[in-house]
Length: 608
Image (cartoon, rainbow, N blue to C red; front, side, top):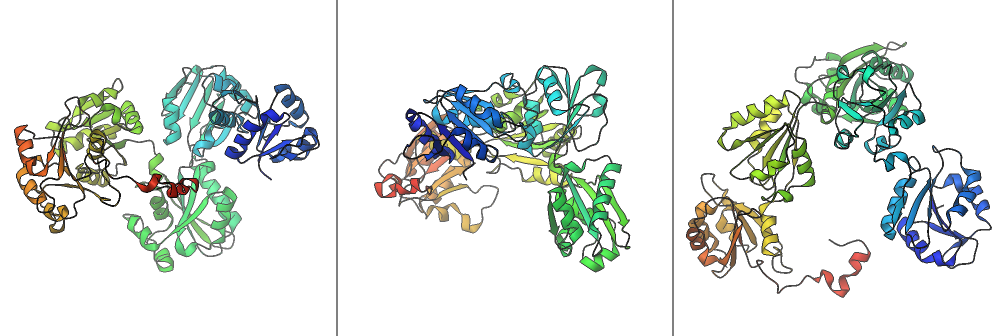
């Protein structure tokens, strides 16, 4: 049966009911004979048979009918379905039962978006804009563990605003959300030693570590531990499970934080590993011996493992390979079962979740501070160091920096100075934002930096940005592709001190007569114009765009034969994007996408 049911008792509710039926894949039930509905003898009989089977129950009509109808069947917020009540116009959509765990709050908000109405949410944490502690972990794959208080008592104290310590010993999207939405009565800590239990009433901890507190605590267990194992054949499953539990307990880790189990591929059918993964609801993943050997490095060589699997080391190498880390949390531990079969176990932390320093290479966009991505802006607001190229990136972008953030212009630094500046902050566990113009992966000169980060084991992430060629299309109000004429955009540069491959010479690319966007080339304008004229007609439209989206932005339009003169007459030297091609300002060609014979693509969800 469908998991969502809509119950109506008035034919005037059919319009809104049909809308929800379509959007939510629900079934409409009524005691009347109405087309498009399933008739039921009574609401009570229907709920008696189906209440516990549904995950969503939507009543359209009076709230009193809803309350009286569901009361005999309500058992627990752990198992009851989401129950919604709404008026026949969809103006007010109220979460009635199972607001958090059953998803009624989320369902009410979704329905309100469909109807253009107002979601009515009365749960205290939602009304006070506090974290929904009972369900927030779901979004980030965290397990919940309470110590010293049950769930209801803990949440009641939290929403009443008692002083709470938030301990973050890993990092992921969830911890970032907690840091960005910190309530006034919560103080964040990154080390357990900094918490004075005498000063707090509750502790919330996102951690794989086992801690013992006298204060009531909620532990969120992130899936951040990678388990590596090797074994002889036919290892006893119960023994292996107990050994893993004992190893984790001894070293102070929660088994709830195990992300996955890893071994060499010849162990893919090892029943002890398969059983452990199934029992703990985690993935069991195997790797080739060559992949394990690639990360083995200075690990101890196991002659037995090498002979049996071809891998120099199995358990430790598997943990490191899976985690992306260079260090183990738990070195190889060996144990033997009652039949003399031995296994080895090692543990590593997922490098992406390790709370250490972090480098973000952020695309600043073309210049306008509002054209940096939302993610880029948030990183700028959270950074401990912002290092930006002042000659290319507007200084205004660094105004997003929080108080206490160090902002440095790299224009006068050599590469080693840049590295030293970033590493000093990274080594203290800080966040570094290296701000590059446009999109950092397009002529961003980030290769040397990435090599340095790789060499020093410093994790980094690249955040895309809007490129100047995209800003050019927007400012020129031009679509750079034309149906049946131009379907290719070429991003390239002129040949200066950096030689171009022969096949990528501008004269060769010009023969395609595609839209060409030229970066870093204004100083080579005479040679560029000559090469372009080998492929394009002299009358081909060109646009010379200076400091796109900056306050100083200027754009000149002309023809290819006049390109060099325009550049020289205006003394242009830096931050210039040159666009060449008939797509500039073209309004003659029309896409067939909106022709009547193509509209079926939208209905079938096949639009490109």
